[in-house]
Length: 260
Image (cartoon, rainbow, N blue to C red; front, side, top):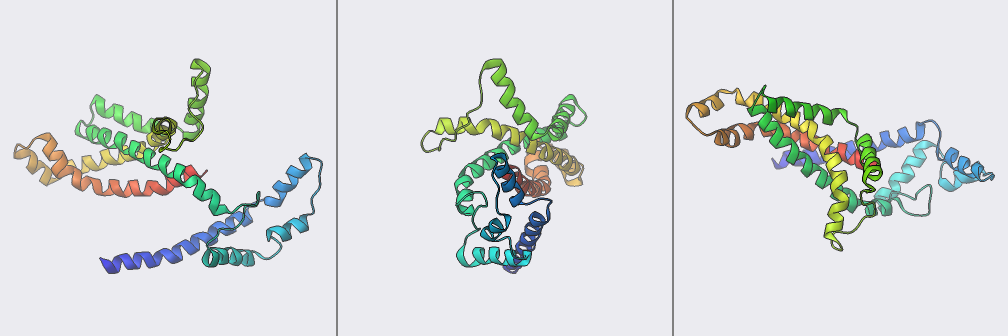
């Protein structure tokens, strides 16, 4: 087990390096660049910029591999991700400033997703092809088909029009005002959690149905065990393995959504 963990950790190093190269090159090879954006902003103010001077100032006057080398040198030797192209501040400072809010929103959303998905998925499997099962499957399909950004816009617009109410927008630290902090996070967490729960709900139902057809579960039923004992002690333990894997796979998806 120790050797396996060490190998996986060592493989993490080249994986991160390859990902960094791909991301760095994709940003550089996309149509347009930061200078075009800066120039358009100056043109809106009837001002002109010296592109060559800006390129030298931003370090974009050297080949791409040199730019990548400078960036990696800053990370490895100085522990910095570099300066922002739109302000005189370090990138890691902005990341660290937003990290507590992002983590809190992500954790609450993930918890809400499992609170919704696991009970509904298990109950749907136990009552296969009943009205409850069809309702659970319908909820899952709606959750998969509804875009997060659209649902968020609807939550922002219609309550404000109908009732003159909008969700809290200003972040309040939990230590300062626990009730205000929770009130700010509950609606975006419900939106993200509902979307994440749809996939987990379908996976839970599928795996529970597969496990419930196994011989050892039939044996448990034949012994006269209660439904709760069969589900919790026999079926759920084996069905939960791929579900945990799916929940782990949702973490980078959630991080990407929160980072947008």
